[in-house]
Length: 317
Image (cartoon, rainbow, N blue to C red; front, side):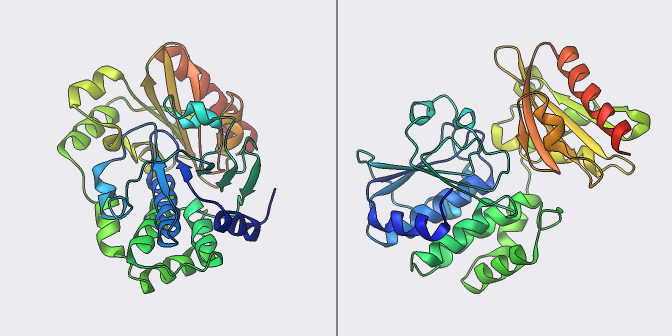
């Protein structure tokens, strides 16, 4: 693994830089990618951000600040991507061509030629903010909005246990640089489309409890998503709802994918390690938030993940 200073030095030397984000993009991968892109463009470099999936329009307040330029990439950087499987179909061609990975997931598979990973960082955006300073680029409102978005969304509006004093200091720095914190938090956490409200209602109707009420499980099928006319952006944040229930120490969300797969999201309280649970199925993430993919029917996937969660509860609580 290289130092963040080495990452800054390398990026200052390179041009025609392609920045990759993960599929089903969230605020951290998008905020990190565009903050870095805008900063490098401020230095006169040719840079663009790519994602396998469509980036939700709600992030336009900073994504549209980056110029869209076409070029033959000569240097490739991934941000907030713990495993090349997370790149998605369209970007999978770059899986073995990534020069530097910048990430905050302890489960990172070390796939890039060079790696900077900081598991103690609440969000990759927290790392990107320091990287931009090391490159000598002034953080303006556009960069600050992107970084603040990454920080806020990956910490549940600064409520999760991954938040540190540095997270708050970085957020404060971004506000000092012009980040529109009130607008961002309102847009990310208080504004929902009608489709989101519909799919949220349908998902909550599937709730079941296990392990004496300490594990709550919900699921979303493709038919449910289609009936609600919901998009990927409408699904963001649903996986956190189950953990909000009093007495629940592990919340599980199953979301049906194509080809007989279910994307599993596990959210836990301090007593459990979600990443250990998901590692049983080849997944990973953070202690309080992790994910994996399980092949099979809904009943098979639900049985497998609830079994693992219930065992973890019995062994640890």
